[in-house]
Length: 517
Figure 1 (tube, rainbow, N blue to C red):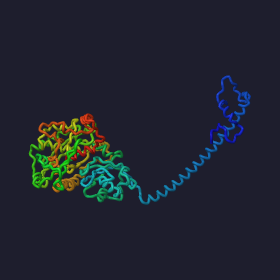
Figure 2 (cartoon, rainbow, N blue to C red):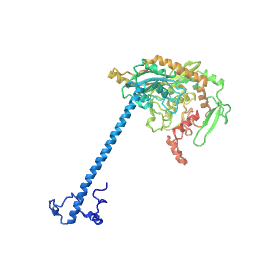
Figure 3 (tube, rainbow, N blue to C red):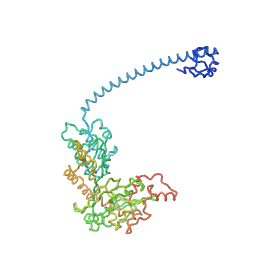
Figure 4 (cartoon, rainbow, N blue to C red):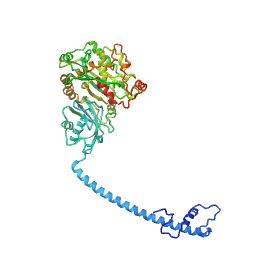
């Protein structure tokens, strides 16, 4: 319907001139001047033409309002009928779906917010965190929980529906004697021992120790106070470097690739793996008391709050998240496994960044084996960016996350249905698992694949300026500074040279480090 004040196509009494005159016609309902009469009769209008126009407008307005109400009523009726039909169809569909789903899903089981205590050997997995394109520890555990009916069928298609979260994320090949997963979990009443039922769907290298009902807002990552890691290191890492032969072409199929990567030019060379004599020499090596003491002192220098931007990837010196607090770092007395000498480093920190522990271990080992003074380590917390190699992932394991504040609140409130998160309840089982599936596997892998031997060989064969900071003076030369976007000096040098990289990603920094190893 058009404008109710305009001429309709059926009205032949209004001419085109009338339409022009309408612009000057008085508006119905307009306020009169104070001097005008307040009478409502047509006698107050002297022009009879205006009287006729007024009647026409009144006629149109009444008719228009009436027609509009009729159209609105018809529209409302149509919408209402459609809504009723839609609701009816949806209701029928919902009832049919409900009946069909009810038969397959069975009775509803109440859920609890829980902390799941787990342990695992990370060999063969791409890390802890769920990854749809790779095998992960969490992926295997989630599937086992679904099969064991600990996760409802409604939530089985997406872990996020269960508020899935881990306390600590471990990298590829890293193990854990204890870790925590928080999730909404159901306890089927017809399963007498849910933990054993879950473990029946897991491989022996992944175990569930137990579960604890928590507060509904429990978040395993945010409520974790700190984490304790262990690193097992053979003391042959303290041996003096052995000079290696470099060639432009591989001599054997298993030669190690040594890359010298820089912004200007990248070269690749090859070095053979250690001979049986060198492998036996490293296997039988025993660290001197002086070496053990220096390594212990070196690791103690990481305690406290420092800027660890040199011990991770993709973090600048000015990034506040580069600062981390290390509570304690202790080095054990030597222990002897299969005739080889090892030490265990226990690191208790508030939180750790990617590769941080492996780089800390490597730096402590490097200053010990190269006669570099300990005062180099505090310089690595400064702005200059250097290349620190990563120690092998083989020796690293997560001992357990700590929930001291949460446990204290639980004890204070004395809530009967809440328990503390305590791995010590399963101490015997965890220690047995560590011996069989972590420690023994680490030692066997070293004896079979000589991972630490390859790591030391690649360090000794390295060429280029990257490690020139390992010197008797403990100074960091300009030549060994890594030039990335995270280094202000490198940015200045890049601008002066008139070159600027379009992309300097974390992956590129990663490649530089891997190339040196």
